[in-house]
Amino acid sequence: MTTPINLNKARKQKKRAETEKKAAENRGKFGRTKAEKTAQKSETARASKGLDGAKREQ
Image 1 (cartoon, rainbow, N blue to C red):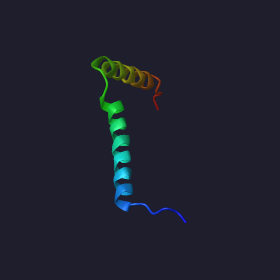
Image 2 (image 1 turned 120 degrees about the vertical axis):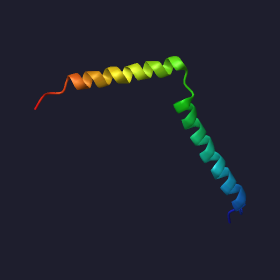
Image 3 (image 1 turned 45 degrees about the vertical axis):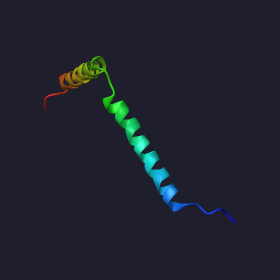
Image 4 (image 1 turned 30 degrees about the vertical axis):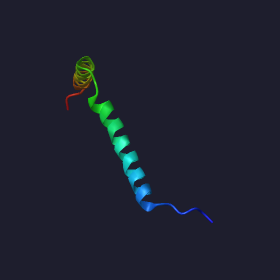
């Protein structure tokens, strides 16, 4: 026989885990320095320009 669990505690623990997961995603998304942001912006612009230049006219 298994031990009974408190459903309120299980629910709260699940919510805490989801909140922590979302916080980790936001730290990665928003927790960057200005230099990192500008570097990524220039990299995406360069890649976009490279793709636009490689398009063929139809």
